Length: 184
Image (tube, rainbow, N blue to C red):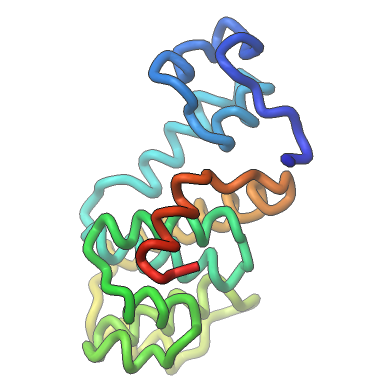
């Protein structure tokens, strides 16, 4: 049970109604609808930060899922494990992102391993990034990718705290999907 009221189409303010027009918009929108003046700008920012951009969808999902795992956000880990499957990540890659197997076994590509080291440093550490992490990622990734992914990581951190702090419920459909892939 969420710690805050999750609005539905009948209880949402008039200015939030459009987000419910297609049915249940999910718990993030249902919670944000209680403060309708934040709903549109927050969703616009999240759409830009997490959605299509110059960075490949695969790499955005690496950043989102790995950040969520590092932050221990049950809701986001479940939701983005399903998304990771949808965008073509393999079960071994997902297990590596979850920390269940070594990163090397899921990611043979040295560039992606460098990216994951950078994501770990960005999402899980405080203070400046270690020079060795920065030097490793810069060998494989241009500025625009790292800048876009840093915004993705920041937006994910915001959602991790939001979902964890309010104990947002995981969709039963997501749970079934992950169980069928052996990822519970």
